[in-house]
Image 1 (tube, helix red, strand yellow):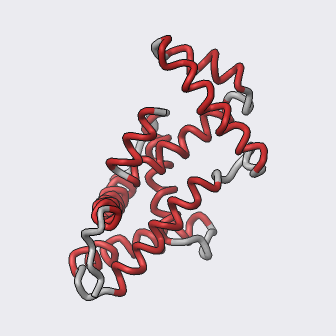
Image 2 (cartoon, one colour):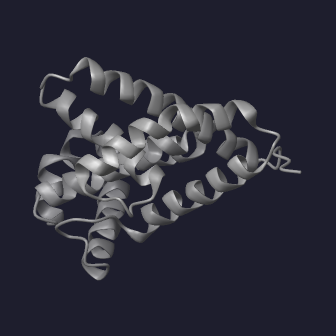
Image 3 (cartoon, rainbow, N blue to C red):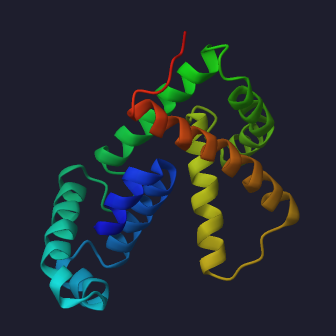
Length: 179
């Protein structure tokens, strides 16, 4: 919970990937709060456990209510992604952000290739980017090999999303001017 709050404040891209991981950890525990408490919450200091139990419990409730127990993402996470999609559009439409536009066009061939491979051609480009980062994170956790081509694509996509996250922070603080 504290990790999520800190990431949301400091790096929205890392926050979104973290929250996708939390959703998957909940799924891995059968969307059952007792299992989450036993396998995840119990590892935290005693003084944090009550707040964590409430937080995970709320997430589990939302997963049931939003019917994302098996796959998909919570509306709170889809809202974050939608906000980033809108900001991406604004940045690309403005002539004031040439370095961002360059990073986008550098990542675009990888995005197109990933979308054609995963068969989700209608999926928003940013969702494809986040799915790629999340997928590689899972591969690394499983200690599976990442090809040099995949590593290069992830590097370019990461740089692009990092710029977007930085602009998100500036926009949140009212520092971005699009005109």
